[in-house]
Image 1 (cartoon, rainbow, N blue to C red):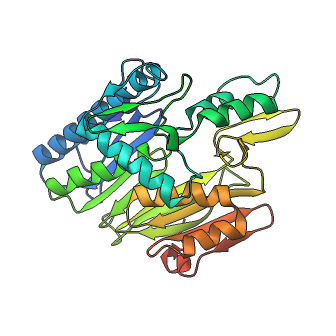
Image 2: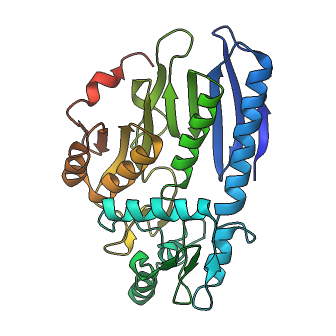
Length: 323
C-alpha cells in the first residue's frame, strides 16, 4: 500500500525540480522531475502513484487478496485464471529465468521463506529443509496455458521480487513520457532510472553505495538515459553466531551468497535489465559476474569486495568526482 507521502510537488525548487517522496513496495521511494505546468505535474504524480497502488495490489505476495497470493494458495489444488498483465509478468519472469540460466527463478518463494531475513533466526535451516525448499522452487515445473496458471505441488509459490520493482520504475518512466516530461529521476528503493537533467547539469547525480562502509558512497555517476541498480549483502541480512547472511540466495546451492562480493552497481538501458544483471552478477561473484555483465551490450558495472573495486570496460565514462 502507498503511504507516508511526505512531499507533494506543489512548488518547484530553485532548479525547477519538483519532488514527491512516499513508501511503496515495502521501501522508500521518490520521484523528482522538472515540469513547468502545475496541473500537468499534479496529474503525472497522481497517475504514477495510482499505477503503483494497483500494481502492488495485484502482484505483492504479502497481500492475501493479490492475484499472486491467489495463485500461491491454489498450489497443488487448482488452476487460477489470470489476465494479460499477469501473463506479461510471467513472461518477464520466464525471460529472466532463461537469461540467467535459472540462477534467478520467479518460483523461488519456498526457498525465500526458509531464509526469511525478517525472522529472528535461532538456528539456520537444516540441509533437509533447504533441499525440500529447492525441490519446490522450480520455475520449469509451473504449468501455464492461455489465460490460466497452475503450480502443481503444494508449497510452491511465485515471488516477483527479483524484477517487479524494476519493472515498476520503467512503467513510471513510461507514464512521464506520456506527459512529455523530459527531466526525471525515479527511485524505488534505490532501483533508479534517470533521464534529462537536474536543472543544473544535463544529467542526474547518483551515488555508488559503499558495500563495506555503508554510511558513505565510493563515487558518483552522471546518469541520463540509463537505469542504476545495486545489489549487495549490506542492506537486508541477519546474523547467526557472528556470521552475516544476506538476503540474496543462490538457487544452485540453496544458501545465501557467501563468496565475498559485498556490492555491485549496474547501469543499463532500462531498470528491468539493470536489476536482473545486478542481482545475477552479484550471485555469480567477482570474476564470473563481471564477465556476465561485459557480455551484455549497453550494461556496465562496478563490483566491490573487502579488498577493492573492479569495473567493466566503459563504466568510468559515467563516473563523476563531485559528491
